[in-house]
Image (cartoon, rainbow, N blue to C red; front, side, top):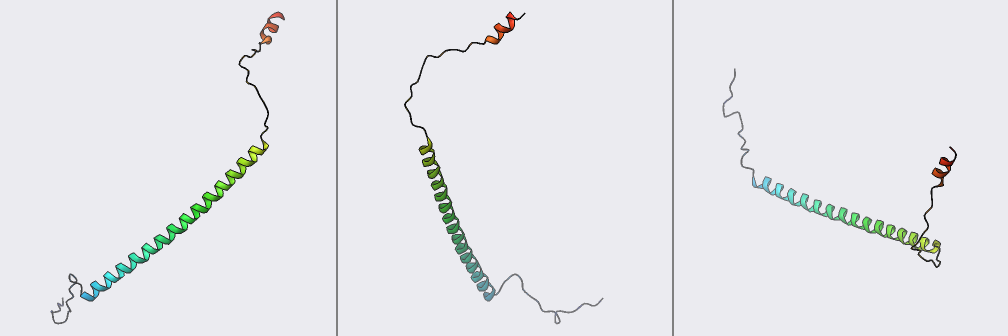
Amino acid sequence: MVVLGGAFMKQVNYLQPSWATRLGAALALIVTLTVGALLAFVFFAVAAAGAVVLGGWLWWQVRRLRRQAESEFIKADYTVETEYELLEDHSRRDAGSKR
């Protein structure tokens, strides 16, 4: 088994990043958050505009159908009768007399 001494191996310190690495990570984070916020704003604006257009179209269709239904409705005078005649079931009486 061959063991290399410390002179042949370069020791890398992974616990303490350099200032350049920290600065690059901070800039990358800022750019990522900025682009993400802008994209979210654009997507929200497109969704809001689509909702307004769809809502307007639905409102217009309901308005058109309501006007069409009002124009086809028969308007006439009417009276409400509170007394009414009951219909009698003559089938039982007829069936009993046939026996």
